[in-house]
Image 1 (cartoon, helix red, strand yellow):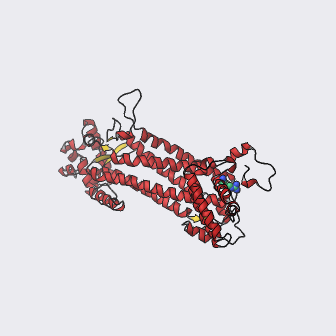
Image 2 (cartoon, rainbow, N blue to C red; image 1 turned 180 degrees about the horizontal axis):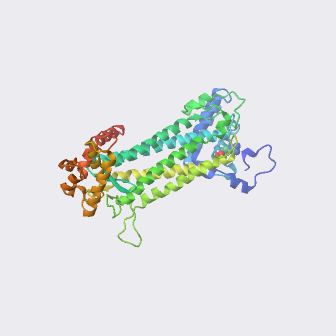
Image 3 (cartoon, rainbow, N blue to C red; image 1 turned 30 degrees about the vertical axis):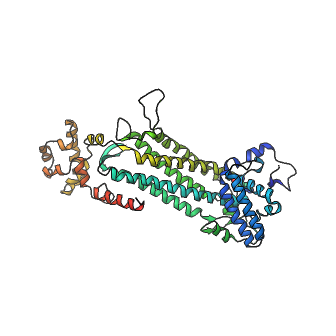
Length: 459
Ligand code: ARG
């Protein structure tokens, strides 16, 4: 069979190699539900304006439902000469309905069709991803009550910095994933415009009703310029970028937990169902899932890069290059979705090794900054206090003790404000209690943020 798009002007059928090279059915088949959804809306609009009859519309809709069933059951044979999912479905319709089927493509081109299908597909993908991000946030927030009293070192430059409550860590990730949800929502808002009716590039001379199809497909508005619709893939770029940020966030978390689960840190025991073994070293329990979450970020970044390069320098309007957008887009959605699906149960089920964490908290002088702030509160200029506490830490390092084990006389010698009250602010427990600023790890701050998240996530 020759391609329906080659009838008429062509006197020769396509070279087989061209068909193989130009096909997209091998990867755009997964658009079929959205293609059928768009086609039904288009048929109803054609009937609404009188370009087809009500009866023809009913037959088209019924046949499209049957074709969808065949695609669901994998019964519709794929033929590369039909190039893409749009032509497979249209041909199946023509095979069933003859001339009535030949009317569906009235006032429509595959250019506005593929744009519509892809927008619908992305919209659903975004809704699914949003759900998965919420699940992951729930996992983090569900840990907060369990880990409420655990103090962890916060790091900068991967060097011990200040003490924080474990829930402060968990909520840091909730904030990141919340911004990702906002980015998704923003992307959804911008892609939620109907291109259907832009036809190939210039619109149509037929009396169509673009508002009707937009409404039927739950688009918020109609895209205003047909040249723009034919060429626009901004929404694919935005989604691919947002997916990259999600993957970046996941990769940082994965790296952190890989470190935390080592014997060197021993902060965390990963759930064994999410670990793998070694074929030669019997003792190994490896964090391969976390490593792959970190590793798969590479291809999500690569996909964004591919898409950016793909659309670079394309003149208006549709160019066949755009067909290549689906492979990286689908891969990024699939990859990030798989990562989120594994992250949520791992976050929920991992166990903090409380005893080990506590036993190491007096290393690294996590309370030094609090001591400096104590001096500032008693009138010592910040630079001077910084220097004096640095000196005291130096002495403690020499004696191989934490600050709280220095002789009180050393404090008094360093500065007159450093009397016995310093022992109320040094030590990680005291240091935690000393915090007070909004957004800090102060216990009352953390508690109110945990409560806000629990409310937001219905926990
Ligand atoms: N398979 C094509 C794609 O995915 C459909 C659009 C083809 N349009 C065209 N004018 N050849 O981009």
